[in-house]
Image (cartoon, rainbow, N blue to C red; front, side):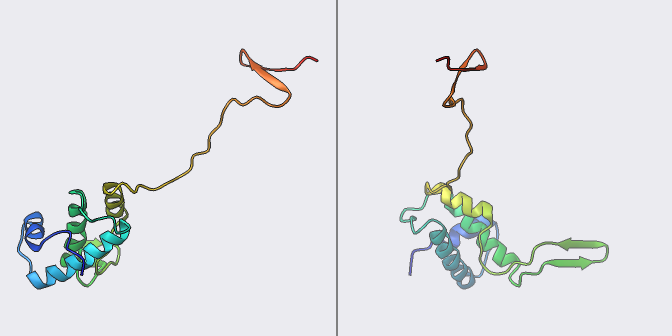
Length: 131
């Protein structure tokens, strides 16, 4: 079993409330495994930036274990995406990847002042070669 990226005591300190140690330990195992998968198992010595992302994943699972997407009490209504279990938001995954130096790769379309085969660029105008 891989090491936890965050202890139960560290989780409680970050959340500001006590949690059931067995339940929190199980959720921390799941969140740690997910974080390791996101980081391509490059979390031998996890950077400090990974811990808040793991705590956030566990907090979400503790606060909304059944993944309710809305609630209504009188005139008050809350609505959100249906989620349950341990998962990483796109921001959490980005934080984990950046912490281990595995930022995404993209492409950029570049434009330049390349000379065409039959002309030259001079003083902001194209001139044909004079033969």
